[in-house]
Length: 109
Length: 120
Image (cartoon, rainbow over all chains, first blue to last red):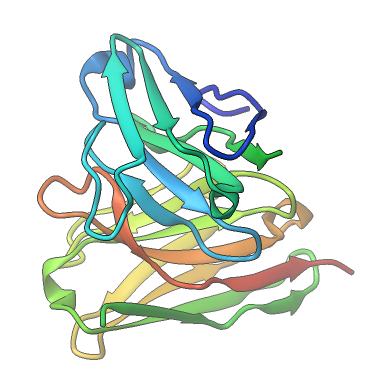
C-alpha cells in the first residue's frame, strides 16, 4: 500500500483539462517535503515531469503544471493531447525514504 | 547526453542471488547520489535503495533491508545492486536513477531498466 494516494484513473477528451491529486500526510508532504511528478509512457521508463511542486524541466510542455497545499498536491494537464496518455506518479519524501503514489492512468478519450 | 544503462537482470530461483549493474555516462558521476527503483508487473514504482556520491551513506527500503546491498565504483562510473535471498515478490523491472542536485529530493535521469524474474 502506497504512502501517497492518487486516483487510479482520470480521462478527458482532447483539448480538455484534467487534474490528478496526490494526498500524503504530516510525515511527508505536510512535513514540508516537495512533491515531484513523473510521466511513464507505455513500455518506457519514468520521466521527470514536474519538480519541486511546480517546476517544469526543460522540454516539458507548459500544458503541464503542478501545485501543492498542505498535505496534498495536484498535477494539471490543460489542452489534453493524445500523446499525454500515460501513467503519472507523484513522489515525495519521508523518514522511510523516497515515497511514490500508486500512479494514475490518464486516458485520452 | 546523460545516460544510465542497467544490466544483470534475468531469471533466478527463489533464494538465489543476482547482481545488477548500472553504467553512467554524460555527466559528472562522482557528484551525484544514485538510486535503484523497481516496478513489479502491472504495479507502481517502489524506491529500493540509495547511495551517496562518496559511498559514505546508503539506505534501503524495509522490503529489501538485509537482503540487498548497494555499492558504486566512481572510477568506473557504475553503481551496483547485490540482491540475495530473492523472493517471488522481488520480480520487477529495476531502474537505476540519478538523485537530483541539490538536495536529492527527486530523480532526474532514469535508465531503461533491467528485468528480474524470481521463479522456480
